[in-house]
Structures are given as C-alpha cells and as structure tokens.
Length: 621
Image (cartoon, helix red, strand yellow):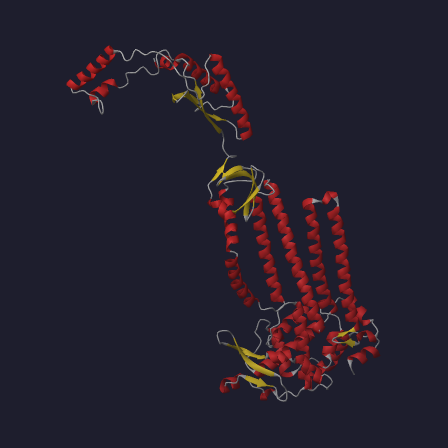
C-alpha cells in the first residue's frame, strides 16, 4: 500500500506515525549492519569506515538507518550527526548550509531506496580492506547497477578512502525515478516509500502543533506536484507572500519616519538600518520555516535556499555599509570637522573601505555557501586588480597624495594660500584634487599629486603681517628736523596697540637720488589681511601728520636748477690738502689701499655713538 492511499484511507494520519508504526512492527536493523549502527552510536567521534568499497556501502546504510531512527525518536542532534557521517561516503561538490543538508538528505534517502530495490551481494562478496590491499583495487561497481564506489585521494596523492563517485551522486535522482515503482528487497524493504514520506511530511524541527495541523489535512493535500505535496506548495507561497508583505509594510513605515521633520539628517539613516535588519530577519525566519518547519525538498529547496541566502547576505552587506556610514558621521560630528575638509574626506574613505571589505567578505561567504568556487575568482580578481591599478595609476597617485596632504596638512579648508603663480582660498581638499577659489572668484582645481609638488605659502597661518615701507623726505629737511621725524615715527610704532614692539624700527637708511630715505619695519599683530590693510592705512595717515607737523615734506622726483657765480675751489684749502697727502707720502703713511694696522687700532671706536645728547648716549653714560 502506497503512502498516498494510506493517508487517504486513514483520514490523513501523519506520515511520521506510519513510519514509526512500521518500524515497530518490523523491527530496526539487525545483524551486521545493526551492529555497525550501534557501534557508530557508541563511538560518535570515530571516523566513517571508508577503507574499502564494502565498508563504504555498509557505513552509508548503517548511518542512514541510524539517522532515520534518530529522526523519528525526536533526537535531531543525533540525526544530524548520523546524516553527516552518511554524507561523508558521497563524493560531492555541494556547499555547506541547511539548504544543502536538506538536498543531501533527499538524495541520501533516494539512494537508500535504490539500494533497497537492487540485489546487493552478500557481505562476504563485497571487497574488503584486505582485498583492496592485495589486489590494488581502485573502484568497484555494485553488480547489476551503475552505482560506482571509487578510491579518493587528497592534493598530496594520499588515499583518503572509498566514496560513491560524484557522477553516481549526481545521477541518484535519475536512478530513483527508474526503480521507484519496483518492490523493495531484503531487510531494507522497511524503507520503501521513505522518500515520499520525507517529502510529504513536515520538516525536521516541526513542532507538535504543525505536525497535528498537517495530520488533520485531507488526503488530497498530500498529492505530489513535482517533488512536493500540495500543502507544501501552499505553505511555500504563503510564507514568501507574508515575508514580502511584511517587508513592504516595514519599508513604508521607514519612509514615513524619514520624511518627518524631526527625523531628518543623521536620524534618517536609522530608518535604512531598520529596513536592512527587517530584510535580514525575514530572510532568516523564512529560511528556517521553509527548510525546517515546512520541510521543502528537491529543486524547490535548492532554489528557495539560494534566493534567501542571497537576500540575507545582501541585507547584511547593506546593513554593514549603513552602520559604518553612521559611525563615520558620528566621528565627524564629535571632532567637529568641516564638511569639505580633508579630515572628513579621510574619515569617510576609511569607513567606506571598511564597509567595502566587510561587504566583500560577506559576498565571499555567500559564494562559499552557494558552492561557487571562490579561490579561482579571488585569483582572477587579483590579476584584474593589478591591471586596473596600472590603468588608473594617475588616480592612485592623486589618492596617495591626498593621504600625504592629510598627514602634512599644509592647507585646510578656508585658508588663503599662494601656490605656484596663483593664490586663493581653499574650498575643498578631496581625495583626487584640491579646489581653490581664486582672487578673481574663479575655481581652480589642482590634482593632489601636482599640488604636493608646489611651494605652498599659507597666509592664514601667519601669526602677524610684515609692515615694511620706505618714505623719502626732501633734501631741504634739516638734520634736526630729520632727527625729530625719526623720534616721532619710532614713538608711533611703540604706542600703536597693533604693532609688535620688537623688532619695530624706523631708520634713516641713505641718500636717494632726490630724497632722504627712511625705512619703516614692523609686524602688525593680525592674521586678517583686510584688518592689516586698515592698520597700515591708519599708520600711513599718522606718518603724514607727523611729517607735516614738524615742517618737513615728502620728496618726489624733481630737479632744482641753481644759477650762481661760483668762486671756484679755495686755493688755500687745496694747498693744505696737497700738503697733507704729501706728508703721508713722505712718512710712508699713505692710507691706500688700507690704513696701517696700528692706525686702525688707534682710530677704532673713537666716534661718539650714540651721538652726544641722545637718550641712548645718556643711558650708556
């Protein structure tokens, strides 16, 4: 009697109850295989016996029997352990995870039913470890079948044991479809129909209320469509629709929160975090419900498992990106960094790089879970990354130069500087270029690599501004007027509150072509150039007042023509000068090209300086 007719005849009795009653009526495995199952239970850490084709076949059957019994006893931990040991006898490329566990459980049950319908040779006729060692056996095919068990080895060539070949594992569903209508044989006949019962019943972790609900369904709900009964298709569609509806509702609530005035700014980011968390939770819950509670199997389980795995990993990657963005904004806000400053750009870059790396790790983990070969992909990305790095070398140079600007910090946003032959106010320091607003209000963008090579004069960071100018007085100015002008100008610099006392000075520096030249040298204690211009203007006006108040005047380019009748040189003075030079010549003291050392020594420091009558001379005395 098939499972479908049994359910219909008994008004929808649970598949689990039928199998349990069948197991009690017929008894659990006996003989050698029962002993092997008991041994595997007694030694859970012992590796599966894969020493020969016969040992691999017996290990698979014993572990699957133990797994089925543990499942119907409600011991899910033991079921997972025994099923994992049974899976170890199969050569496969299926990735880990719950979806692959369900897929492998489905294939293993199909293989168990296939073995129940073929004629297995007696245990003594199966190749054992001694025969493998004696004959060098590398592969064995179960007589009358295409089920092949072959020796496997690791990358070093060391034999790891005999496994059902990957080709055999891939063809198990085809083998099952060919013989599923044949009667079972031998002691494995108790497992006839277990695949259909597995597919029709609820999942491994279904609670009692779900099991009771499934038991109460009419028989037509257990009709198989493809690999799943109608009730599982209905539960699958309902679960996915509820998950989608819940996410849409949560998305709309998050959008409303973002649009509230009180939630604008950085608070709106938390709505995006909530959406990511909601998507992740729904993916995990739907994954658990569909695989463990509802128990979908076959291709449907593989497709749903892949989709939910992708959704969950993408939600995690997006959640990481949003959380790190929030962390970057928090750091910028705490440190009170400017919106366009290099510090802000660097903080965002560091957090973006961290989010990208973590996101790539999540995607690599997802690919590993889906069975995608990650190592060749990473190798290809490495070669491709090198090619891309060579192609974008100028951009990388600018990025590296941006880090140099961050470390050296020659300029910051808002500072006025001179670079090359241009000057202006820095508006932004980015990872690729520096943008400067010129004096003519044009925006100049300079690549970071080029900007780092320039001589940069930062006017904003000076602690004071040099005031240095020259004024010329008319030659008609008397010596005492000149002295008084010097005194008054020095007093002006000393008294002015915006002039640093040291090293402020006013000096009579020389005789110009048409003026008596005075130099003013002082530091104005301000960083603002506009304020400096105002202070300079004030000082210039006061200088004019001082010069005009003393009765002197400013010189300007001019020529004065004097008409006089000159008496010529005084003959007496000329004769005295000649006599003096002749005396030096006769005494061998002619001071050309230099004075004698003794004379220079006697003459040194004999001039009254500071001049007699000056305040400095008084202080020195």
